[in-house]
Length: 108
Length: 123
Image (cartoon, rainbow over all chains, first blue to last red; front, side, top):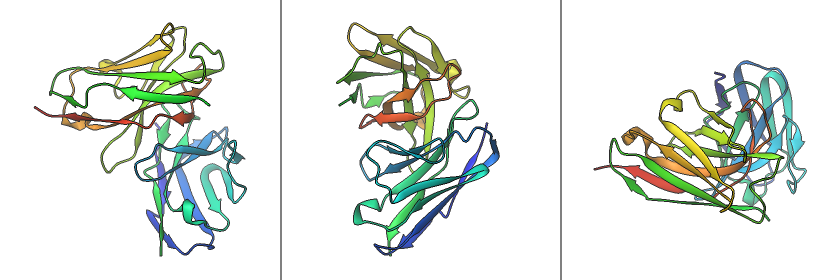
């Protein structure tokens, strides 16, 4: 199965700053079948991005996804207070689907 | 707006069977556009896909759990269910149901998710 490694584990930033989150796959995600989710404490994960770069319905355009092959990135252009959360990547290119261990974006 | 809600016991004894139900509201489970999935979040750890089911009964299971998992669907109640047998403390987790993207090979993404239910395995 594909192992997804997210970095950094924790990202400490101020509101208004740019956040860059990395997701590296142990083998190529050949079809770009990668998603990003946001999870706040006590809540369910929320889909942000699918197919590596397509924003889900209702997701603000400050969230963007990019990448291909084994390296993918989630960028939040300007952090809003509600963006401080844990972010997970997930690949659905190879069975079984797998998730990264998450990156926590916290107030600096 | 589609909503999912998990229900079932919050405490299961070791070596017994965990049983949970997901009730879907605001949409039909018999849609041909989606699968329906169970996932779990282990304490302090990440997310794990357990399995997915189509309304017709077609299932896909995570190979790591396949020998212990059964997912079924009840279209008359707009529900689908999870059974996980021979549980141990390692199965203690928040269990969540979700709508899954359509895939004839079990390769789904998930949206939306239910709020989750904590299941603790302990005697």
